[in-house]
Length: 279
Image (cartoon, rainbow, N blue to C red):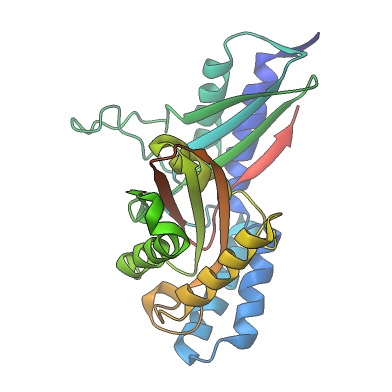
């Protein structure tokens, strides 16, 4: 059994909160730069160039890429041979508190969804725990802004809706979102399980690299078709029109009930912030 100090969890989470908010991922940057070479709309191309310029300034000046620094979503996978000397949930929230304070990141969390009083430190985080083999702890911090989160949806389809029903729902969700979630988008799709499982799958799909190819050729083909259909909508960067409405689409699936076909779409802006570390 390997002992891990809770303070190391706190420090790691704090660092990841800052990194995720300051730096654009290499896969995201590469996708935007690639789209700049193919985008035919002059206004859209200018927006893509500005996104790269904004990312460069944020990294150089060590400041947030976007004023909405998100609600912290934290994925914690604990090895069965690891033991944390302290309260793991409290350690994660302490890290969010520390990271958002030291990184000068906006506090965007209210203590009650209807009473709307700000907690002042961006806690509590939304934390998903999982267990794996080994003696390490993997932590992924994925701050989620609500300009894009608000555009996400879940629908309980019938099995007879099939592949076409799933794809139509995904495209409809993006079309209804329009320019609100600050495209170009990354679209995470979860299919299967139950209502909440589909939503979690869609969120996890956003953590995959943009160049990730689904292991199942059937779903890889669906991802390609969806990306083409979404970009054909013509919404374009920041809703100004053009060829680049989405940078990528990733699908994750899970077994489901014989009577159901749950589908979730988690929309993310071009930044799709997340940072990972292993302790």
